[in-house]
Image (spheres, rainbow, N blue to C red):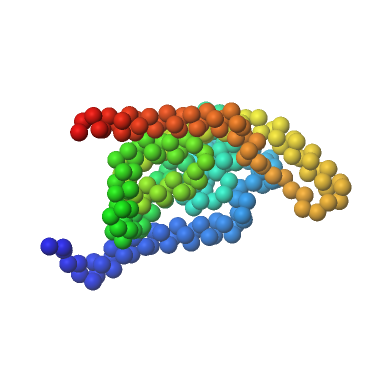
Length: 260
């Protein structure tokens, strides 16, 4: 017999689900208003480069922790510019520290939004979605680690969407965190490595920007194109790793009829 909840308890449960989600949405709107559609930008980095370099040189540990905090907020609030932020980590701190800081920030930020979405959306949506959706969610949960590792490795899937789908499917926290941490390592390392050579990108962009201003054209701006980093070779390597992550699922499916 289902347990009858007191109205006060029902209100408390509703607040526990809705308040965190509402807070994230509100903060995301504020962040979008502050950073704009383009999110974090190369122009902002160049404009404040001297101050940033001085701060990193004098307070390296605090700078790394601040960077991780910003990364957590960017991921949790789905602010555009996570790839550029990863590249900036390599530029500011070098490959090992920059990549490690990006992986840490991405994992914590993804975990926060996953927990918020799972509490607010996961269980209520599954209850209302019907048996077919429940079966799909169960299939996802049964092989959650492999599916998530694939989705994290292949950059074709939006990062924020990969945070939400497992939450709605009711995936457990441990496989989500583990697959996220492992899955973002290759991309983070590649982007941070690209950041170690960002000076050359800045020089080219600055030259084009100055030429645009000199020609008197409107709309001159400094821009970072993620496709400059996401080369066909890198994309192919990430897809190959992603497909490798699906091998355990394929093997399990092939062996299943033999056990019947």
